[in-house]
Image (cartoon, rainbow, N blue to C red; front, side, top):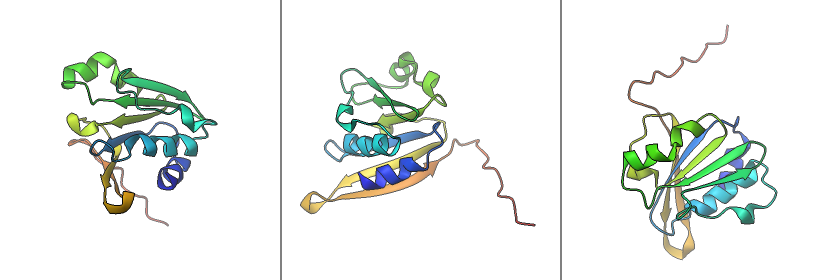
Length: 139
């Protein structure tokens, strides 16, 4: 949870986070850490939205927490209005590997290992036609 809290501490408030991992890998726990880093007072209200499909938490910025576990594909996600929340707060998507999203996002892969430890890989994803802005060179 500490890694997630630290990661969220640097968020501007319009990020999208894709959480990928098997059942029990720690996706919801990672979301609690993100919520803590975003200033949510009671992280115990963070729970997996498997049956509700989306939970909203009011922190420093809104957190839109999606769970795609029970969805069949792209049409189901679009029917949720998923894209309406992009840029309106921090969007966290559990089971993001079930569909291809053509958007910039932070991709977090959680893997359960021995002794209740977790391996966490964090990368940034970009759409295929996305061109990263070039870094300015100091003058």
